[in-house]
Length: 602
Ligand code: PEP
Ligand code: MG
Image 1 (cartoon, protein in one colour):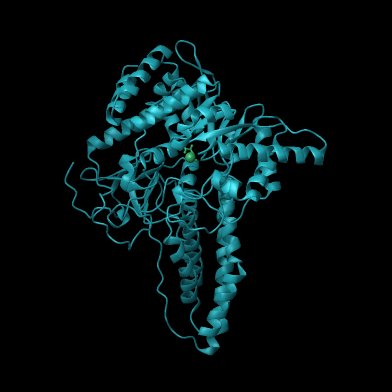
Image 2 (cartoon, helix red, strand yellow; image 1 turned 120 degrees about the vertical axis):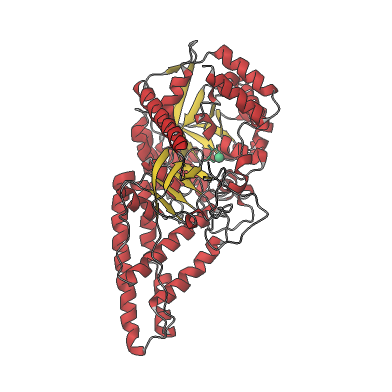
């Protein structure tokens, strides 16, 4: 590869252009002369031609309106609101068709914002009183919120900033009666400083092969949408969009977060092979996906699905899943504005439970806060160590009780189980159990019939939970290991921070040893254990986890076929020996290399 001469992307702050250069921070990229490393936000490899997607920017005239121009300007503003609403309704319809109602709610929330009287009345009043143009007032009004949201490190506020920015640009474009620029050359890889969910949905109609953005995180809305559309995406690349123009040959690997510009023939061949192998192995594996998985020596291994929306249930059976091992209910907050009502939740959960009965549905209670979505405008200096998951549930009885009550009432088939996020103490589990008892007694009194009590499980995703795993496994019906957060909190590495991404290493001996400790303690105490973090999907770690005694894995449905195929090639004895060996190794590098050699020898 040749030496890279163009501007190098900076580590991403998730805030895009104009951010301060941080020369002290290690560079996020490049890896080689033309290779960059960002965050893999949606898996898969895309090879193609770049398309630099830039939204039109409009200058705002700072002129003072003549008195006779004022009503006309307000009229223009109202028309722009109508046009924007029409566009959003169209996007909402496309989204419902492509991805289901869950995602479409995002746009419903934006439409509601267009009708927000506080915002629209204050804009109208300012045009009238200050005699400013509508564009200028809109820019200033939205700018106030945007500034506040952008200054937050919280994922929720970043998403809100994205929504506000999208609406602002939409209304201003419509003031200029410009049509949305959303048809682009077919089959390109889109590069942009920033994309909103609406952009991704609309651009995807042009058969986009992949997306690359300067901003964004692994759990952002655009990443969830790309995952559901099966389009590879890499995000968090600093000022990458300023360095690459349209028409360049480009490769993106949404699994590793790698982007290669002007790849050599050799590199293209390598990625073509990798992509073909991945596709072939998915195709082979899917032929037998619906068969139960056994190791070569006959040990049964079960695979379940991690899902974010009920629309995903349709495909889980054909993917070879035995049920839902993790339903991330915080996605019901996807519009981020309000707590879902008990009746809404009840209908949602009941539908899901009915659809997959008798297969299990593990409902994780809202894991809001931290880097996830949040329903209230609380700002924290260090959100990942702040008010998140079980802490919010315990502090806000309304949220907890509505959710538990909906779950209890929805559990007609007895196949719903509850999973508690971010557990750090036994008292938290006891609190939830006691609340569940009370609610269940209330429901019995109200309805006269008993309700099926769900099993209660704890997420093991904070080192404190590992330390008290003996007590936890005696207190709950099952545990599920969340390796994404366990890695983040054990190594003290923010899972969404590209600057320290290389340190986010699941092969770290601390993680490997904690996994063994959790699995073996659960086994000793006859507490069923499973794993639902991303590590469960990795062919490298699967034999180690089986060797530690794990038999249940919850993964994205698309991965089940390939994992089942791999299970059929291993024996318990060899995985147990492998696990013991890895537990003796003192570095992530040695552990990874031992797991690689095991895989290569299969
Ligand atoms: C985890 O932390 O590993 C996990 C499965 O939960 P989430 O990724 O939703 O935090
Ligand atoms: Mg987690």
